[in-house]
Length: 271
Image 1 (cartoon, rainbow, N blue to C red):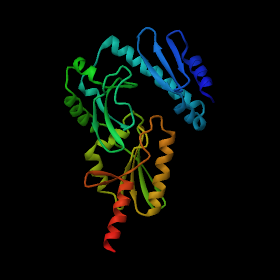
Image 2 (image 1 turned 180 degrees about the horizontal axis):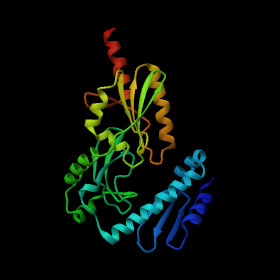
Image 3 (image 1 turned 180 degrees about the vertical axis):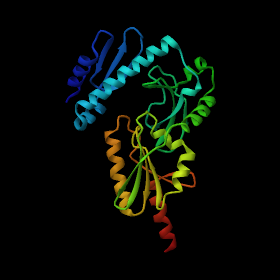
């Protein structure tokens, strides 16, 4: 599928009665403006086409659903205003994710790792809206209050997991599809509890927003399996974050490639 075909298909599904479409062929994106709400969003076509190559119609179904729910949330926000801090949650994104909204307002963020950054979202039921600085006066809170509320909220999320053994290593998958699976990497109590049952190296992966993978890596083969696994999830995820995994030790996250580099250095020092 080519970009013009994708735009045509999206127009067919979403219609032109409510939306004004602007196709930027050079940047390979389409701008969608809601005629009533006077708000819009940019849709990057190449990302959808990559997913279409593996997921076919399901990839288009996902993006159409996301667009519809986002505009419904905007409409609800416009009609009802904002809710309290109980609906604020942290969101993990890659460091390449835009730091400001399409309207030019800076998002409220917190540094996390070299690969990831924490954003904050106002949960709106079927979707959520990332919190930017222009929303703080409407919520009547400070950025630090947003961060504190999110730290509390993430601890309330369920942490049930599925367990799988591959090549002698154990993998635990947290996949509730609530939009906050990757956010559970911020639940320190949950991670510390998982660490008590890990026999090998404990790894944590957030390849996309709807999965958190905890590994009990007991061999070099286990690391190879982990690398292949995270790359696969990163490729098929609706909102990719990072294909790089982290080693969790003493409450700290360290990228695996840095760990490997340090091991080589220590071995050289011994020699």
